[in-house]
Amino acid sequence: MMQRAVFSRGASLAPRSAPLLMRLDRSMSSLTIPPPAALLRPLEVPNRYLFGPGPSNVPPRVLAAGGRPIIGHLHPEMYEIMNDIKKGIQYIFQTENNMTISMSGSGHAAMECAVFNTVEPGESVLVAVNGIWGERVAEIAERMGANVHRMVKTPGQLFSNTEIEQAMAKHKPVLFFLTHGESSAGLCHPMDGIGDICQKHNCLFLVDTVASMGAAPIFMDSQKIDILYTGSQKALNSPPGTAPISFNERACDKMFNRKTKPVSYLLDMTHLSNYWGCDGQTVRAYHHTGPVSGFFSLRESLAILAEKGLEESWRQHKELAAYLYKGLEDLGLTLFIRDKDLRLPSVTTIAIPKGYNWRELLVYMMKNHNMEMTGGLGPSIGMVMRIGLMGYNCKKSNADMALHALADALKNCKKSKV
Ligand code: PMP
Image (cartoon, rainbow, N blue to C red; front, side, top):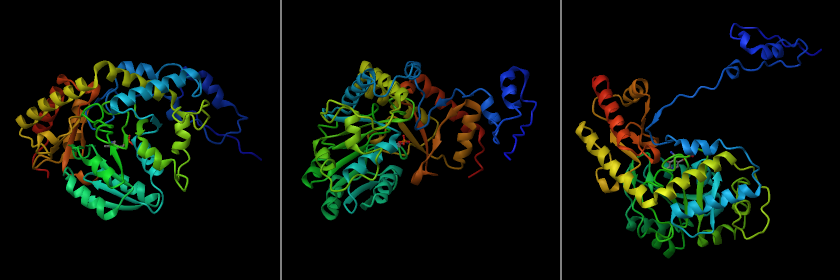
């Protein structure tokens, strides 16, 4: 005999939820698992100052775009919105690449898409590791069976073009990965000349701009970057969950002339290129259901950047970062990246002040100022604290607020705890 449901009627089931009580009281219910009490309470989300490395606060206009009615992912209006997104990505990447889309997924989806589509098992991949993101890509490539070679430096250090070329000559990779905005270390890596070296060695150049896009200059076509990706939730100020990516002709030649299929169906560019209308076919077939609301938001955030202008956005980030550096130094703090021209304007790293427990500082600011800053990530844990002021948050008043919160935390978190 089927067991009857026995739901206790707790005090939390106040009279306001009469229809609910009726549902719970159904003595003939076949359910053994009751509705979770947590879901019978309204959703609560605090308002916070997101001054860490992302996600960043989202402007009301982008939030409102995400709240528009859902339409079908294969409706003509949706295709038009996706076409607009493609044009917006071409603008912010500074590329004419036709193979330009947004992933349905976070920055990691773009990382996996880039590697899974352009590399086949057993092929050689060269990865520059100077923070967490190189290490992530190395692991992704290893998981799909690539022969991975790491060039490792301590977080925040640079790779010279000579070092890159020597490693390329030695390992003969089909793909070389470098992070433009190393958000775990606060470094903005120079890009010039590397694309030429990659072309000379018949290697694709893959660049991560999740933390730098819209905040620091990058020119996909003129810098000869073969594959470029970013994420939605940093300077672009969209909710997390979509990730622009673009492939040039060299990358398309490699990924569409493979012997083996990519390990992921969801991330297979033969399907995604059709879904995004990049493959020249007249019919776009169903592949997966794209994040409709996420694409509305992404379109709006790209529109904001198009209205403002990319160069103006770069200028604003640089100017605000300089203001922040001065304020941090006035507090007696040391910036982790010594050369100011190599600092990532969107995410600033400070060396952990001597004698302080960094976790305590962060908890203090969250508790007393409702403000998120973060510690390091991966190899930079225990080395840095990170302050992100990007896109919508790129304002002098926010820098002042962040500096005030830090000053307060330094005053109140005892120096004795190391
Ligand atoms: N690359 C960089 C430089 C990042 O900062 C991040 C996010 N912190 C990622 C990749 C991964 O993006 P996501 O968390 O959206 O998957």
